[in-house]
Amino acid sequence: MMLDKNILDMIEYPKQGILSKDLEKNDKINLTLFCMAEGTNISDHTSTKGGFVYVIEGEGSFKLEGKDIAMKSGVFIYMDENAVHSLKATKNIAFILALV
Image 1 (cartoon, rainbow, N blue to C red):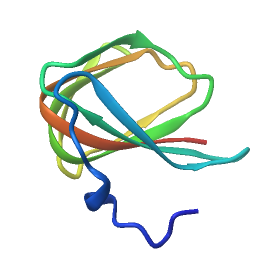
Image 2 (image 1 turned 135 degrees about the vertical axis):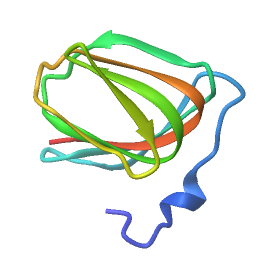
Image 3 (image 1 turned 90 degrees about the horizontal axis):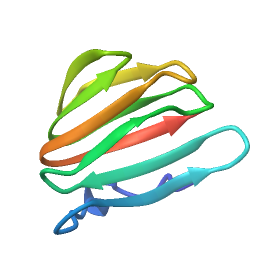
């Protein structure tokens, strides 16, 4: 596990789309840093694992099971497995996705 890395130093935004960086991946947890360019969308999808999103910086909107959640620094979003969700970056946004 990357315990000696500063997540803020790892943030870099693409000109468009999404840049993801694996922080830890094993049979118990999948931790990924996502950096999304302003205007990028991820359409409705699900995951076979439960998990959470923790917003580090930026702004966006997260739709979870039909409920709109404002994404901004410090927001924590918990998701059950198979929950339908989507998101949009209204400004450059960085967040950690943990699937367990």
